[in-house]
Length: 475
Image 1 (cartoon, rainbow, N blue to C red):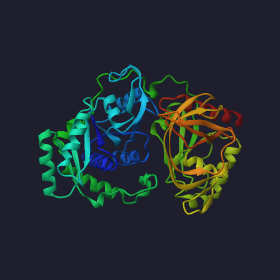
Image 2: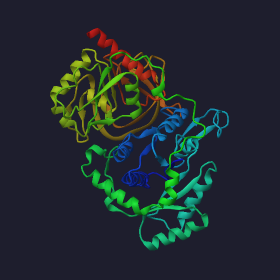
Image 3: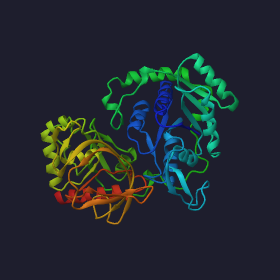
Image 4: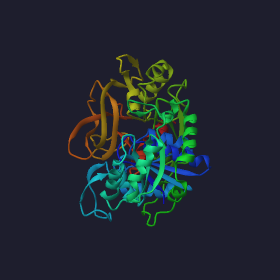
Protein backbone atom coordinates (compact mmCIF):
# COMPACT_ATOMS: atom_id res chain seq x y z
CA UNK A 1 0.00 0.00 0.00
CA UNK A 2 2.56 2.59 1.15
CA UNK A 3 1.71 6.05 2.47
CA UNK A 4 2.37 9.63 1.54
CA UNK A 5 3.94 11.92 4.12
CA UNK A 6 2.20 15.25 3.62
CA UNK A 7 2.32 18.60 5.37
CA UNK A 8 -0.39 21.08 6.16
CA UNK A 9 2.01 23.64 4.64
CA UNK A 10 5.68 24.04 3.76
CA UNK A 11 8.18 24.01 6.59
CA UNK A 12 6.25 21.75 8.98
CA UNK A 13 8.92 19.03 8.98
CA UNK A 14 7.90 16.61 6.20
CA UNK A 15 11.50 15.84 5.30
CA UNK A 16 12.52 15.33 8.94
CA UNK A 17 9.60 12.96 9.54
CA UNK A 18 10.32 11.10 6.28
CA UNK A 19 14.03 10.69 7.06
CA UNK A 20 13.22 9.59 10.61
CA UNK A 21 10.92 6.88 9.27
CA UNK A 22 13.44 5.78 6.64
CA UNK A 23 16.35 5.74 9.09
CA UNK A 24 14.44 3.66 11.61
CA UNK A 25 13.31 1.18 8.95
CA UNK A 26 16.84 0.79 7.60
CA UNK A 27 18.14 0.22 11.12
CA UNK A 28 15.73 -2.73 11.20
CA UNK A 29 17.33 -3.96 7.93
CA UNK A 30 14.15 -3.31 5.99
CA UNK A 31 14.38 -2.82 2.22
CA UNK A 32 12.73 0.54 1.56
CA UNK A 33 11.96 2.39 -1.67
CA UNK A 34 11.35 6.12 -1.35
CA UNK A 35 9.70 8.59 -3.68
CA UNK A 36 9.49 12.39 -3.77
CA UNK A 37 6.59 14.38 -5.18
CA UNK A 38 7.72 17.20 -7.45
CA UNK A 39 10.92 18.23 -9.21
CA UNK A 40 13.18 18.44 -6.13
CA UNK A 41 16.74 17.10 -6.32
CA UNK A 42 18.07 17.60 -2.79
CA UNK A 43 15.48 15.78 -0.67
CA UNK A 44 15.96 12.64 -2.80
CA UNK A 45 19.71 12.79 -2.05
CA UNK A 46 18.92 12.44 1.65
CA UNK A 47 16.49 9.60 0.94
CA UNK A 48 19.12 7.72 -1.06
CA UNK A 49 21.77 8.29 1.59
CA UNK A 50 19.53 6.60 4.15
CA UNK A 51 18.01 3.80 2.07
CA UNK A 52 20.90 3.01 -0.25
CA UNK A 53 18.43 3.08 -3.17
CA UNK A 54 17.83 5.91 -5.66
CA UNK A 55 14.77 7.96 -4.78
CA UNK A 56 12.31 8.40 -7.65
CA UNK A 57 10.59 11.69 -8.46
CA UNK A 58 6.83 11.59 -9.05
CA UNK A 59 5.97 14.64 -11.13
CA UNK A 60 3.08 14.62 -13.64
CA UNK A 61 4.14 18.00 -15.07
CA UNK A 62 7.63 16.86 -16.03
CA UNK A 63 6.36 13.43 -17.12
CA UNK A 64 2.67 12.43 -17.08
CA UNK A 65 0.06 10.94 -14.78
CA UNK A 66 0.52 7.53 -16.42
CA UNK A 67 4.28 7.72 -15.94
CA UNK A 68 3.84 8.55 -12.24
CA UNK A 69 1.69 5.45 -11.81
CA UNK A 70 4.06 3.27 -13.80
CA UNK A 71 7.15 4.53 -11.99
CA UNK A 72 5.61 3.95 -8.57
CA UNK A 73 4.30 0.48 -9.49
CA UNK A 74 7.62 -0.66 -10.94
CA UNK A 75 9.92 0.50 -8.18
CA UNK A 76 7.73 -0.04 -5.12
CA UNK A 77 7.31 -3.71 -5.99
CA UNK A 78 11.08 -4.20 -5.76
CA UNK A 79 11.14 -3.44 -2.02
CA UNK A 80 9.46 -4.52 1.18
CA UNK A 81 8.29 -1.04 2.15
CA UNK A 82 7.58 2.13 0.19
CA UNK A 83 7.26 5.72 1.31
CA UNK A 84 6.37 8.90 -0.60
CA UNK A 85 7.38 12.36 0.64
CA UNK A 86 5.01 15.09 -0.49
CA UNK A 87 5.68 18.66 -1.56
CA UNK A 88 4.56 21.93 0.06
CA UNK A 89 1.11 21.70 1.66
CA UNK A 90 -1.15 18.74 0.86
CA UNK A 91 -3.33 20.58 -1.67
CA UNK A 92 -0.73 23.03 -3.02
CA UNK A 93 -0.45 22.49 -6.76
CA UNK A 94 -0.98 24.36 -9.99
CA UNK A 95 -3.92 24.88 -12.34
CA UNK A 96 -4.16 22.47 -15.25
CA UNK A 97 -6.74 21.03 -17.61
CA UNK A 98 -6.93 17.27 -17.15
CA UNK A 99 -8.21 14.56 -19.47
CA UNK A 100 -11.44 12.64 -19.13
CA UNK A 101 -9.90 9.16 -18.72
CA UNK A 102 -9.17 9.87 -15.06
CA UNK A 103 -11.88 8.46 -12.83
CA UNK A 104 -11.89 11.51 -10.56
CA UNK A 105 -11.97 14.19 -13.27
CA UNK A 106 -14.65 15.40 -15.61
CA UNK A 107 -13.87 16.09 -19.26
CA UNK A 108 -11.46 19.02 -19.43
CA UNK A 109 -12.04 19.91 -15.80
CA UNK A 110 -9.75 22.58 -14.39
CA UNK A 111 -7.79 20.89 -11.62
CA UNK A 112 -6.37 23.52 -9.28
CA UNK A 113 -4.19 21.08 -7.32
CA UNK A 114 -2.49 19.41 -10.28
CA UNK A 115 0.94 17.96 -9.32
CA UNK A 116 0.16 18.46 -5.62
CA UNK A 117 0.64 15.80 -2.97
CA UNK A 118 -3.14 15.28 -2.97
CA UNK A 119 -3.08 14.72 -6.74
CA UNK A 120 -0.43 12.02 -6.36
CA UNK A 121 -2.37 10.43 -3.50
CA UNK A 122 -5.41 10.15 -5.76
CA UNK A 123 -3.40 8.85 -8.71
CA UNK A 124 -1.81 6.11 -6.61
CA UNK A 125 -4.76 5.55 -4.28
CA UNK A 126 -2.54 5.97 -1.23
CA UNK A 127 -3.46 7.08 2.29
CA UNK A 128 -1.92 10.25 3.69
CA UNK A 129 -0.07 10.78 6.95
CA UNK A 130 -0.45 14.47 7.76
CA UNK A 131 2.43 16.25 9.53
CA UNK A 132 1.29 19.18 11.67
CA UNK A 133 3.62 21.78 13.15
CA UNK A 134 2.30 22.10 16.71
CA UNK A 135 4.83 24.64 17.95
CA UNK A 136 2.22 27.41 18.15
CA UNK A 137 -0.93 25.31 18.53
CA UNK A 138 -3.02 23.63 21.16
CA UNK A 139 -6.80 23.33 20.64
CA UNK A 140 -6.61 24.69 17.09
CA UNK A 141 -4.86 21.53 15.96
CA UNK A 142 -8.27 19.85 15.75
CA UNK A 143 -9.62 22.49 13.36
CA UNK A 144 -6.59 22.08 11.10
CA UNK A 145 -6.82 18.28 11.12
CA UNK A 146 -10.57 18.32 10.55
CA UNK A 147 -10.21 20.74 7.65
CA UNK A 148 -7.69 18.54 5.88
CA UNK A 149 -9.67 15.41 6.70
CA UNK A 150 -12.90 16.74 5.19
CA UNK A 151 -11.70 19.07 2.41
CA UNK A 152 -11.51 16.35 -0.27
CA UNK A 153 -13.40 13.09 0.43
CA UNK A 154 -11.23 11.30 -2.14
CA UNK A 155 -8.22 11.71 0.16
CA UNK A 156 -7.92 9.27 3.06
CA UNK A 157 -6.04 10.73 6.03
CA UNK A 158 -4.64 7.66 7.78
CA UNK A 159 -3.44 9.66 10.78
CA UNK A 160 -1.35 12.58 11.91
CA UNK A 161 2.20 13.12 13.10
CA UNK A 162 2.50 15.88 15.67
CA UNK A 163 5.79 17.70 15.18
CA UNK A 164 7.60 20.17 17.46
CA UNK A 165 5.62 19.28 20.56
CA UNK A 166 6.92 21.29 23.49
CA UNK A 167 6.06 19.35 26.67
CA UNK A 168 3.93 16.60 28.17
CA UNK A 169 1.29 19.19 29.03
CA UNK A 170 1.36 20.46 25.44
CA UNK A 171 0.94 16.92 24.13
CA UNK A 172 -1.98 16.31 26.47
CA UNK A 173 -3.79 19.39 25.14
CA UNK A 174 -3.19 18.28 21.55
CA UNK A 175 -4.48 14.76 22.20
CA UNK A 176 -7.59 16.02 23.99
CA UNK A 177 -8.36 18.32 21.07
CA UNK A 178 -7.93 15.58 18.45
CA UNK A 179 -9.84 12.88 20.35
CA UNK A 180 -13.33 13.75 18.95
CA UNK A 181 -12.01 13.34 15.39
CA UNK A 182 -10.97 9.73 16.03
CA UNK A 183 -7.93 10.41 13.88
CA UNK A 184 -4.97 8.22 14.88
CA UNK A 185 -1.84 9.94 16.17
CA UNK A 186 0.86 7.96 14.37
CA UNK A 187 3.84 9.85 15.74
CA UNK A 188 4.95 12.56 18.13
CA UNK A 189 8.21 14.45 17.62
CA UNK A 190 9.38 16.82 20.33
CA UNK A 191 11.22 20.04 19.65
CA UNK A 192 14.70 18.89 18.70
CA UNK A 193 17.52 21.34 18.08
CA UNK A 194 19.99 18.56 17.28
CA UNK A 195 18.15 17.20 14.22
CA UNK A 196 18.17 20.36 12.13
CA UNK A 197 19.49 19.99 8.58
CA UNK A 198 21.32 23.16 7.45
CA UNK A 199 20.06 25.06 4.42
CA UNK A 200 21.11 27.92 2.12
CA UNK A 201 19.92 29.85 -0.95
CA UNK A 202 18.34 26.91 -2.82
CA UNK A 203 17.14 24.80 0.09
CA UNK A 204 18.88 22.10 2.11
CA UNK A 205 22.64 21.73 1.88
CA UNK A 206 23.27 18.55 -0.20
CA UNK A 207 24.44 15.37 1.47
CA UNK A 208 27.95 15.47 -0.01
CA UNK A 209 28.66 18.68 1.92
CA UNK A 210 27.62 17.40 5.36
CA UNK A 211 30.46 15.54 7.10
CA UNK A 212 28.27 14.95 10.17
CA UNK A 213 25.37 13.52 8.17
CA UNK A 214 25.75 9.92 9.38
CA UNK A 215 25.65 11.08 12.98
CA UNK A 216 22.49 13.04 12.21
CA UNK A 217 20.87 10.02 10.56
CA UNK A 218 21.72 7.90 13.61
CA UNK A 219 20.00 10.45 15.84
CA UNK A 220 16.97 10.34 13.57
CA UNK A 221 16.92 6.55 13.74
CA UNK A 222 17.06 6.73 17.55
CA UNK A 223 14.17 9.16 17.48
CA UNK A 224 12.19 7.04 15.04
CA UNK A 225 12.49 3.95 17.21
CA UNK A 226 10.47 5.65 19.94
CA UNK A 227 8.34 8.42 18.43
CA UNK A 228 6.15 6.45 16.01
CA UNK A 229 3.24 4.08 16.48
CA UNK A 230 4.88 1.28 14.52
CA UNK A 231 2.02 -1.15 15.12
CA UNK A 232 -0.21 1.02 12.94
CA UNK A 233 2.48 2.40 10.59
CA UNK A 234 4.16 -0.80 9.40
CA UNK A 235 1.05 -2.26 7.73
CA UNK A 236 0.54 1.07 5.93
CA UNK A 237 4.12 1.13 4.69
CA UNK A 238 4.05 -2.43 3.38
CA UNK A 239 4.51 -2.33 -0.38
CA UNK A 240 1.68 -3.88 -2.39
CA UNK A 241 1.02 -4.02 -6.14
CA UNK A 242 -1.40 -1.48 -7.56
CA UNK A 243 -4.77 -3.17 -8.23
CA UNK A 244 -4.88 -1.82 -11.78
CA UNK A 245 -1.33 -0.93 -12.87
CA UNK A 246 -1.11 1.26 -15.98
CA UNK A 247 -0.48 -0.46 -19.29
CA UNK A 248 2.80 1.32 -19.87
CA UNK A 249 5.91 -0.84 -20.34
CA UNK A 250 8.90 -0.09 -18.13
CA UNK A 251 11.58 1.67 -20.14
CA UNK A 252 13.92 -1.21 -19.36
CA UNK A 253 11.66 -3.53 -21.39
CA UNK A 254 11.31 -1.34 -24.46
CA UNK A 255 12.46 -2.92 -27.69
CA UNK A 256 15.68 -1.07 -28.26
CA UNK A 257 18.25 -1.56 -31.00
CA UNK A 258 21.39 -1.29 -28.93
CA UNK A 259 24.86 -0.87 -30.44
CA UNK A 260 27.40 -3.66 -30.13
CA UNK A 261 29.71 -1.35 -28.16
CA UNK A 262 28.41 1.21 -25.66
CA UNK A 263 28.82 4.94 -26.04
CA UNK A 264 30.71 6.38 -23.10
CA UNK A 265 29.17 9.45 -21.50
CA UNK A 266 31.08 11.48 -18.92
CA UNK A 267 28.70 12.42 -16.08
CA UNK A 268 30.00 15.25 -13.89
CA UNK A 269 29.09 14.27 -10.34
CA UNK A 270 30.64 15.83 -7.26
CA UNK A 271 29.80 18.55 -4.72
CA UNK A 272 29.39 21.15 -7.48
CA UNK A 273 27.30 19.05 -9.89
CA UNK A 274 24.83 16.57 -8.44
CA UNK A 275 21.32 17.45 -9.67
CA UNK A 276 20.30 14.43 -11.76
CA UNK A 277 17.05 12.52 -12.06
CA UNK A 278 17.90 8.86 -11.64
CA UNK A 279 15.45 7.99 -14.41
CA UNK A 280 17.51 10.07 -16.86
CA UNK A 281 20.66 8.15 -16.00
CA UNK A 282 18.80 4.84 -16.19
CA UNK A 283 17.50 5.69 -19.66
CA UNK A 284 20.97 6.47 -20.94
CA UNK A 285 22.18 3.08 -19.74
CA UNK A 286 19.15 1.26 -21.12
CA UNK A 287 19.78 2.90 -24.49
CA UNK A 288 23.31 1.55 -24.60
CA UNK A 289 25.42 4.17 -22.86
CA UNK A 290 28.21 3.49 -20.40
CA UNK A 291 28.18 6.17 -17.72
CA UNK A 292 31.57 7.37 -16.53
CA UNK A 293 31.28 9.49 -13.40
CA UNK A 294 33.95 12.09 -12.76
CA UNK A 295 34.65 15.31 -10.87
CA UNK A 296 35.41 18.70 -12.45
CA UNK A 297 36.46 19.71 -8.94
CA UNK A 298 38.94 16.95 -8.14
CA UNK A 299 40.02 15.22 -11.35
CA UNK A 300 42.99 16.36 -13.41
CA UNK A 301 41.37 15.55 -16.77
CA UNK A 302 38.07 14.55 -18.33
CA UNK A 303 37.58 10.76 -18.62
CA UNK A 304 39.34 9.10 -21.53
CA UNK A 305 37.56 7.84 -24.64
CA UNK A 306 34.19 9.42 -23.91
CA UNK A 307 31.88 10.48 -26.73
CA UNK A 308 29.62 12.84 -24.80
CA UNK A 309 29.39 14.90 -21.60
CA UNK A 310 26.53 15.65 -19.21
CA UNK A 311 26.80 18.43 -16.63
CA UNK A 312 23.83 18.44 -14.27
CA UNK A 313 22.76 21.23 -11.99
CA UNK A 314 24.16 21.90 -8.56
CA UNK A 315 26.14 24.59 -6.82
CA UNK A 316 29.09 25.67 -9.00
CA UNK A 317 28.82 29.14 -7.42
CA UNK A 318 29.70 27.67 -4.01
CA UNK A 319 32.79 25.96 -5.43
CA UNK A 320 33.67 28.57 -8.05
CA UNK A 321 37.20 29.12 -6.77
CA UNK A 322 38.05 25.41 -6.82
CA UNK A 323 36.51 24.98 -10.26
CA UNK A 324 38.45 28.00 -11.54
CA UNK A 325 41.73 26.71 -10.12
CA UNK A 326 41.34 23.40 -11.96
CA UNK A 327 42.54 24.98 -15.20
CA UNK A 328 43.51 21.70 -16.87
CA UNK A 329 39.94 20.43 -16.68
CA UNK A 330 38.43 23.77 -17.75
CA UNK A 331 40.69 23.83 -20.78
CA UNK A 332 39.99 20.17 -21.59
CA UNK A 333 36.22 20.69 -21.42
CA UNK A 334 36.42 23.70 -23.72
CA UNK A 335 38.68 21.91 -26.19
CA UNK A 336 36.45 18.82 -26.28
CA UNK A 337 33.32 20.89 -26.92
CA UNK A 338 34.94 23.05 -29.59
CA UNK A 339 36.11 19.86 -31.29
CA UNK A 340 32.49 18.69 -31.47
CA UNK A 341 31.79 16.58 -28.39
CA UNK A 342 28.01 16.55 -27.70
CA UNK A 343 27.40 18.13 -24.30
CA UNK A 344 24.29 18.59 -22.17
CA UNK A 345 24.54 21.28 -19.48
CA UNK A 346 21.60 22.04 -17.17
CA UNK A 347 21.47 25.09 -14.90
CA UNK A 348 24.67 24.71 -12.85
CA UNK A 349 26.23 22.96 -15.84
CA UNK A 350 25.24 25.94 -18.01
CA UNK A 351 26.94 28.25 -15.52
CA UNK A 352 30.14 26.17 -15.71
CA UNK A 353 30.27 26.55 -19.51
CA UNK A 354 30.11 30.35 -19.20
CA UNK A 355 33.15 32.63 -19.24
CA UNK A 356 32.74 33.51 -15.57
CA UNK A 357 30.69 33.00 -12.45
CA UNK A 358 30.24 36.18 -10.41
CA UNK A 359 29.28 35.27 -6.86
CA UNK A 360 27.01 37.02 -4.37
CA UNK A 361 29.90 39.23 -3.20
CA UNK A 362 30.71 40.34 -6.74
CA UNK A 363 33.92 38.32 -7.07
CA UNK A 364 34.41 36.70 -10.47
CA UNK A 365 35.88 33.28 -11.22
CA UNK A 366 36.85 31.97 -14.66
CA UNK A 367 34.93 28.95 -15.95
CA UNK A 368 35.19 26.84 -19.12
CA UNK A 369 34.57 29.79 -21.45
CA UNK A 370 32.51 27.91 -24.04
CA UNK A 371 29.58 30.35 -23.93
CA UNK A 372 30.25 34.09 -24.45
CA UNK A 373 28.39 35.16 -21.31
CA UNK A 374 28.79 35.23 -17.52
CA UNK A 375 26.54 33.89 -14.76
CA UNK A 376 25.85 36.45 -12.04
CA UNK A 377 24.47 35.40 -8.65
CA UNK A 378 21.65 37.56 -7.27
CA UNK A 379 18.96 37.64 -4.63
CA UNK A 380 16.04 37.06 -7.00
CA UNK A 381 14.83 33.47 -7.19
CA UNK A 382 13.66 32.18 -10.57
CA UNK A 383 11.32 29.30 -9.80
CA UNK A 384 8.58 27.40 -11.58
CA UNK A 385 7.48 24.92 -14.20
CA UNK A 386 8.11 25.88 -17.80
CA UNK A 387 6.57 25.05 -21.16
CA UNK A 388 9.44 25.30 -23.63
CA UNK A 389 9.05 25.42 -27.42
CA UNK A 390 12.20 24.46 -29.33
CA UNK A 391 13.07 27.24 -31.78
CA UNK A 392 15.65 25.22 -33.70
CA UNK A 393 16.89 21.69 -34.13
CA UNK A 394 19.29 21.07 -31.30
CA UNK A 395 21.17 18.37 -29.47
CA UNK A 396 18.09 17.03 -27.65
CA UNK A 397 14.93 17.93 -29.60
CA UNK A 398 13.79 19.07 -33.03
CA UNK A 399 12.44 22.51 -33.85
CA UNK A 400 8.78 22.88 -32.95
CA UNK A 401 8.92 20.31 -30.14
CA UNK A 402 7.35 21.33 -26.83
CA UNK A 403 8.94 20.04 -23.64
CA UNK A 404 8.11 20.66 -20.00
CA UNK A 405 10.74 21.46 -17.42
CA UNK A 406 11.51 23.29 -14.21
CA UNK A 407 13.66 26.30 -13.32
CA UNK A 408 15.18 26.90 -9.89
CA UNK A 409 18.12 29.30 -9.68
CA UNK A 410 19.36 32.62 -8.32
CA UNK A 411 21.68 33.52 -11.16
CA UNK A 412 21.18 35.26 -14.47
CA UNK A 413 23.29 35.59 -17.61
CA UNK A 414 24.85 38.85 -18.77
CA UNK A 415 24.16 38.13 -22.44
CA UNK A 416 21.08 36.75 -24.20
CA UNK A 417 21.84 34.10 -26.85
CA UNK A 418 21.38 35.28 -30.43
CA UNK A 419 19.93 31.90 -31.42
CA UNK A 420 18.18 30.62 -28.25
CA UNK A 421 17.07 27.03 -27.80
CA UNK A 422 13.61 27.71 -26.42
CA UNK A 423 10.78 30.16 -26.15
CA UNK A 424 9.46 29.57 -22.64
CA UNK A 425 6.23 30.27 -20.81
CA UNK A 426 4.79 29.39 -17.45
CA UNK A 427 3.16 25.99 -17.37
CA UNK A 428 -0.08 27.10 -15.72
CA UNK A 429 -0.77 30.15 -17.90
CA UNK A 430 0.28 31.78 -21.17
CA UNK A 431 2.67 34.25 -19.56
CA UNK A 432 5.70 34.46 -21.81
CA UNK A 433 8.99 34.06 -19.94
CA UNK A 434 11.18 34.97 -22.92
CA UNK A 435 13.78 33.02 -24.85
CA UNK A 436 16.62 31.10 -23.27
CA UNK A 437 19.17 28.35 -23.78
CA UNK A 438 22.39 28.12 -25.76
CA UNK A 439 22.76 25.83 -28.75
CA UNK A 440 25.96 27.25 -30.16
CA UNK A 441 28.25 25.45 -30.71
CA UNK A 442 25.68 23.15 -32.33
CA UNK A 443 26.82 20.19 -30.25
CA UNK A 444 25.83 21.94 -26.99
CA UNK A 445 22.52 22.01 -25.16
CA UNK A 446 22.95 24.50 -22.31
CA UNK A 447 19.80 25.64 -20.52
CA UNK A 448 18.45 26.72 -17.15
CA UNK A 449 15.46 24.42 -17.70
CA UNK A 450 15.79 21.04 -15.98
CA UNK A 451 14.21 18.21 -18.00
CA UNK A 452 13.01 14.79 -16.84
CA UNK A 453 13.33 12.39 -19.77
CA UNK A 454 11.08 9.62 -18.46
CA UNK A 455 8.15 10.37 -20.75
CA UNK A 456 10.37 11.60 -23.60
CA UNK A 457 12.70 8.77 -24.54
CA UNK A 458 13.43 10.56 -27.81
CA UNK A 459 15.53 13.10 -25.84
CA UNK A 460 18.27 10.66 -24.70
CA UNK A 461 17.94 8.81 -28.01
CA UNK A 462 18.68 12.02 -29.91
CA UNK A 463 21.62 12.82 -27.62
CA UNK A 464 23.19 9.37 -27.96
CA UNK A 465 22.65 9.37 -31.72
CA UNK A 466 24.74 12.54 -31.94
CA UNK A 467 27.39 10.99 -29.67
CA UNK A 468 27.62 7.87 -31.86
CA UNK A 469 27.81 10.01 -34.99
CA UNK A 470 30.74 11.98 -33.61
CA UNK A 471 32.42 8.79 -32.45
CA UNK A 472 32.13 7.21 -35.90
CA UNK A 473 33.64 10.31 -37.53
CA UNK A 474 36.58 10.21 -35.14
CA UNK A 475 37.26 6.53 -35.88
